[in-house]
Length: 131
Length: 56
Image (cartoon, rainbow over all chains, first blue to last red; front, side, top):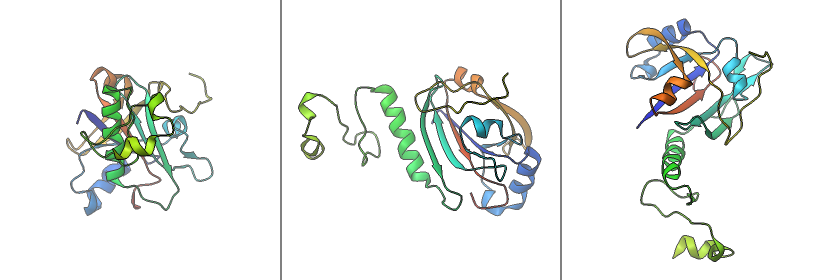
């Protein structure tokens, strides 16, 4: 999809290797597993927990020109949903092409209804979404 | 580089960074840096989690 997924934790690359080798859930993993033992990258994105030395569950989408488009940070015990990540990523791709449109909350993929903000939409979002 | 790290915010340019990675596909170690990914015209998705050997 023209995207590079990199997972990041404060473990070293050696631990990543051992985990990948041991955990059957990771058998099909193809993405690069990033090591951030100093917490420098985690701090850059504001997910470094100084108390534990671990990274919080954060997901960040960066455009090809280096702009941070999306961030999502969950508490320790809340897993992330890959469908929601893909929805946001696809919306970012779409909006990178059509910056004057907006993807509403129910937007899922190309072809779904978008909004074009303007004077005629003021107070008429319901109509714009449902016409 | 300064020791103080400013957190990047939505809409801002992400400063260049480099990560040492394990690449399961090659079963080897390598590097990823944002400037190379930008040159390749790629979007980058960073997925942070607390620790290996736990659920992600």
